Length: 201
Image (spheres, rainbow, N blue to C red):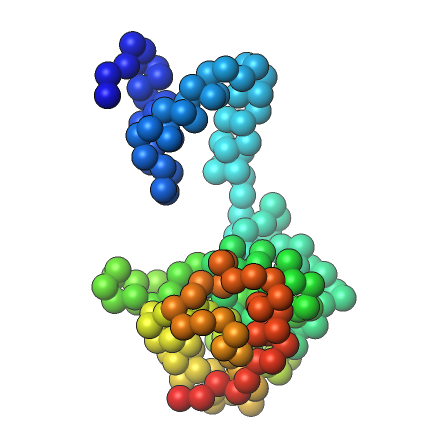
């Protein structure tokens, strides 16, 4: 694809780095931005730069946050004896949208996947174990995807946490095998959390 402008070409190349965006879609996005008022484009660009420069990860649960401790961990009305372990920030958002869960979270930001070079030491598992061993946590819900990698990660976490005097549960299988929580409808996800079961090997 040839361009009449190097600046346009550079913008298209950057849009094309986004997941699921090909060159044609990237070109449409770049041309759309070109037609917008300058102040809108500057606001768009500054919000991305601001996020990249200033966003933090919660020192407690690893959720993205504007401060050292996220709003969920800082909320004293939440059940602090209950921790839901999820793969990603998107999963937290999906569960929060159900309005059926009032505990805390622990965001792994990935799952164990040897084929992708991700091992247990690459995930904040030691931090989770530290929370369980030092705080008054009574139950850990393993709300990971039902893929092979998700199941492997759940099994690993179960083995690390079962020496503590806590309940370890997993979401009910209203979520089909291989599904990601992110794409599960809110009612199914809510029922899966509500009907969680003891983790079984």
